[in-house]
Length: 603
Image 1: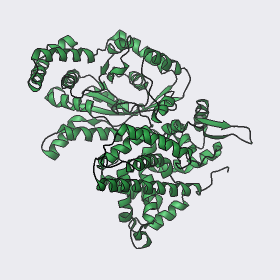
Image 2: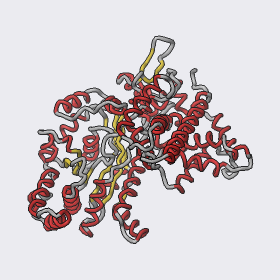
Image 3: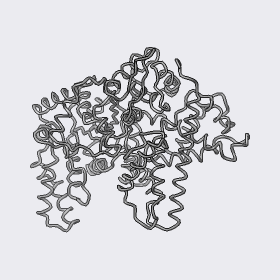
Image 4: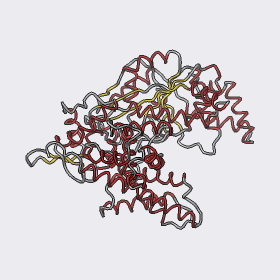
């Protein structure tokens, strides 16, 4: 690849500098010097010697894990790599993610990727080693700076013309809750612009969704501390040393799975066909959310996710292993019905994988074991619910439609239409399902309304498989739910809705004419949520979450509730709070159904 000095001499660089000088009104010499500094800062090389050293360091840092790669899709990716640039877009759970993916790809014959990482991690001397092995350190914010983004586009164009592969973590940071965060569009926009400006010089770009999931992570305790309102520890060499030491303990497996690629040329052509031209502002979000869907669809269900799913939200009860498996049996039956991806050690008939997950969670302090009775019992340790929820939330996206059907049926049961046995379920539940979908749109990736409608019908059919879908009524579905062994909504969306309710309640107390200080409102909501949890007014301690409460404010902003305004705004805020109180009440009804469901084996 061209060095920074070589990039400075290209016609593309000169044209970009001239355009920037014209747009900003600055002298061309000043723009040129600043542009050169930007390129010098971000440009990386892949040198053999540095790459070998970096890879040895990576293998040492990932020594806690056995890397479990589903290699079935890799031959097709290797074939694509011969013709196109590949852009790997993984979810982001750990600082180890790039090292894990590097090992997974290297072991299967792929060349090193150029990896984008935050400049906050550029700590000498590791930063120099990283730059010589393909690590591109980028600024986390480029607001009001037209030069840096222009140089990013220029550099991406050079990489694509050189048929190089790229990798970045498009959530913009590690997940704090365990589930996939909304994608950040900036870098993807630079890539789309670079590809479009290259014309035919880059044949195509394949965006490869990658799911990376860990059995356990040393970082989760710190992430959970930050999530409940604690301050993040700044990165430093001392921090890096402590992080490296934390990887000495065996923590099971890390699972790497690849989803089907999204092709950039096809996305641009489809956009042009729909609208007459490929507008990046329309293409980028569509592509980003499609990649996110495919990451979620590739994510395997692991023993750790299942164990925490079973132990959380049990009304404070400890469970034996047999009872935990009893809670999970109907869930796994549902997983098999839907043919969802699971790891090879998820087998209730041979629960060794579950036992290993329990032992590791006990050793990490996330789960408490009491073995002074007839047989051991387990529960989530006090003040470790956020960590347990992190593992559970890796798979909650698979159950969100089921959860919405359950809550929509509970809410619809109170409607006048529900009393009429001749009224079909679909129109009655649909309105409630859409409202719940809108409440949760900043937490989960939903399909289009047409696809969502099909998903709702499919879930209803799973709930009542022996009934005619066009003749199913609300009362029939609720009756089936009350008899069902599988009730999910309280575990899947209860914490999210409780967190949103706290924010909505606090927002409703604000004077509508005064501007809302969002950071202050989130901090206040965290404190109020902790108080309500201690007073047993909240059911889920996982709802004491900075991330969830920030998203609740995004929803309020989307509904034009942040003001300032007049009495109409006050009324709208009160209606928002009431909508969330009704949703949380439906969760409580759902939880009661779960507690009265079939008694777990061994109880």
